[in-house]
Length: 483
Image 1 (spheres, rainbow, N blue to C red):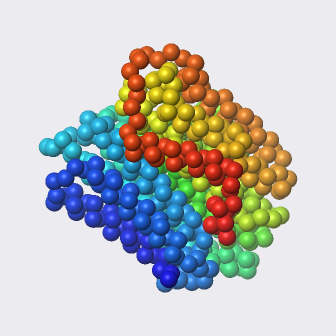
Image 2: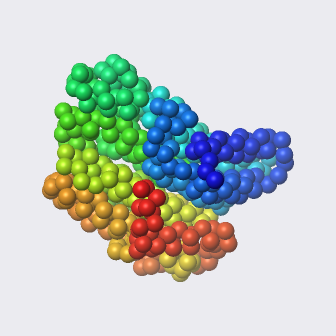
Image 3: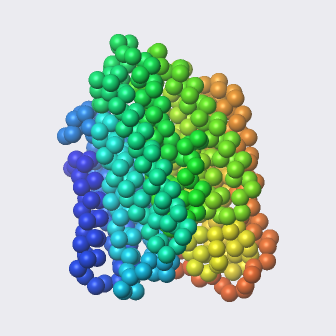
C-alpha cells in the first residue's frame, strides 16, 4: 500500500505544531520534546519508504515533484533533524544558561519544535518544481533559522550571528525574487519544466534569462555557502547554538543543493546556454574549493574550522554539478552530489555530536580545548577520529567514496584545472582535520576529570560511526535509493 508524498510534510508540520501546543499547556520535562520529536521523525522516515516515486505530475501539478530525488532529500532532512534533536538533549544546559525565563526549562520547548518546522520546509524544497513553491518553502526554512541562530539571547556571539544571518538572508531573498522576476519576464513561466521548454525553443531573450539565473545563483549560493556568497558562514557557525550549526551545515545545505539542481536543469538542457552555465559553475567551484580549504588551514576555533570546511565541501559539490551538467554529460546528475551529501551528513553530525557532549566538560570551542581528550574519554576521541578521517577522505570511509565519485565525474568531463584544484583541496583537508587528532592524542589535558557520555548520546554516536564505514564500503544501497 502506497501513500501520497505530501503526506510526509503534513505529518512533520503536525508534529511541530503539536510540540508547540503541548509546550504551552502542559508542565512536563521539556527534554522529552526532543525525544518525542526525534521518534516522530523516525516514524515519518519509515513512512517515506511506503511512498512510490513518480515521474509524472502529482496532486500539486507543476508545483510539487514526488520523484526518487525528492524522496531521497526528504529522508536526509528527516534523519538530520532527528539527530539534531537528540543533540539538543545534551545541549539543554547551555540553553538554560543563556535563555532567560520564569521557569528552569524556559525556551527548551521552542528550541526543540522549531527545527521540526524547518524540516518541513526542507522537505518542501526537495519537491519544489516551481519558483513560487521554491520561494515559499525556502523562506519557511530561512525564517526558522533566523530564530534559531540568535536563540541564546544572553550570548553576544549568538545575537551577532543572528543579526548577520538576518541581514544577509534578507539580501539573498531580494536577489532570489528579483532573479525570478527576470526569468519570468524572459520566459513567461515560473514552472521549471515550462521554462526548460521555452529556453529549448530558442525563442527567448538569452541575456535576460542569464541575468535572472545569475541572481538566483547568488541567492542559492548563500544557502549552500559558495564563494563569494559565503561571508556569513564563519561568524554564524561560531555564534549559533551548536545543534543549530549542525542543522545549518547539513540540512540547509542539502536542501539548497537539490533546489540548485532543479533550477539549473532547464538552463543546462538549453544548447545555447549550457556551455556558459557550466563554465560559470566551474569557476564558482574553483573559487569555493580554494578559499574554503586555504582559509581553514590557520583556524584554531573548531566551529570556525568546520565552517570553512563546509565551504570547501560546497566546492566539491559544485564541481560535481559542473561536471555532470557539462556538454558531454555521461552520468546521472544526482548520484555523486547526493551520495556526497549523505556522507557529509553522517560525518559532520558525528563531529558536532562529539563536540556537544565534550563541550559539557571542556571550556570553549578552541581546538586547544580538546587537548588530551583521549585520556579523559577514549570513546569520544575515537568517534572524533572517525569523523575527521572521513571528512579528510581516508579510504574505506564514506568521505573517500564521495570524493572519488566527484573526482571521477570531473575527470570524465576533461575539466583538468578543476580536477587539479579538487585534488589539491583534498590534500589540504588532511592537514586541518588532523589538527584535532593531534590535540586529542598528543597534547596533555588541562584536567584529568573523566568525560562521561550519556547512554543515548553513545548510541547515536556509534550509529553514525558505523554508517561512516558501511556507506564507504557498501555504497550501493544509498545509490539505489536514487534510481
